[in-house]
Image (cartoon, rainbow, N blue to C red):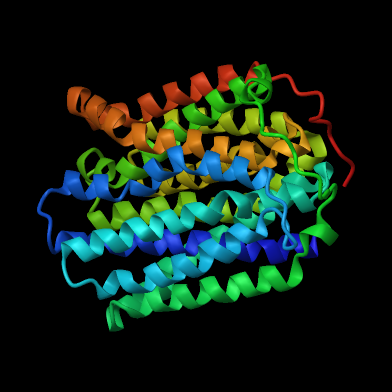
Amino acid sequence: MRKTWLLGFGFFSISLGWSLYNGFVPFFLDNFISSTALIGFLMTIDNYIALFLQPYIGQLSDRTRTRFGRRMPYLLIGVPLASLFYTLIPLHTGITTLLICMLCMNLSMAIFRSPTIALMPDITPEPQRTKANGIINFMGGCGAILAFSIGSFLFSIDETLPFLAVSVIFLLTLWIVFKNINEQRDAISYTETILPKINYKEELNSPTIYLLAAIFFWFIAIQGMEALFTLYGVNELGLSRSASAFSLTFFSLSFVISAIPSGLLGARIGKKKVIVIGVIGLIVSFLLLNWVESVVYLRTILFLGGVFWAFVNINAYPFIVSTGSEKSYGTRTGLYYLVSSLAAITSPPVLGYLIDLFGFSVLFLAASGSLILALVCITRVQDTSDQPQEL
């Protein structure tokens, strides 16, 4: 588990970087662009890049063989580039330079995101992967909390400071991971033999397809809820903007608290069982939100919802890795992010359109409907490798 905590620094920096980027870059865009819709589109560049580039990078890393390993070269190239362009974002001189820096930063992040995550199953035995995923997601959650707390403080002093700080953390994290994780030494079944190109027809077996569909539908629900909740709180519940935004932190906070226990539970009783419990819990939570009238009840249910979301999200990635062979970890990581990115692109406009038609009261009903589809898909997944483990 020591290697997992060290690898968690990689996930910590990724989450820290994206949280701060999503939180503060819209302010820069707002100085030049009056259309909120256009700003929203530009802020989804990473999802479009992930849709096309990350599956390719993940597959490429599966077939890469160097003296540094198969994943590490992508970190050694991508992290310094991301650090450079991250620093340049607040130093833009106009909308053109801002957009160029944003695009280059997103491309740089795409180079190392899938290989970084794929390192986890590379160095972690199957029985420990849910626990390991809980740890790295806990680290990621800490990165997000740090971005919005200390990052906001630094931003109030000077808009360049949080970006410079994150760039330094990127490089420090790379040094920690590079110095402590040696793929040739630490990978479970490392081999210098160059593997053949992955056959997607073989990898997209029935369990994988149903699992990818389930991932898509539960991300539709979660991404749409998170994107539109503050508007829901103001327009449907009559909350202030700050109270509405603060309420959503209960969902995020409980996810972070529950990350490691969710991984332990998945290792004990099986990943699929915990995911099913989590999806059912989310359905019930989202349905109950349609009848809340008290802010206390609202935040209590959101807190419980975050626990159930941890059940789902922490066990999903190890589950999809377990449905394939060790030669395809990078490929499956890319597929996981492809599907989640597709949901991130699709969900806000689709749920927003339903709100335009039926009002904000439809938000959690639509999200519940998507979760029901996810439940149908996950129950169709048969995976004999998903066996409970003694802790």
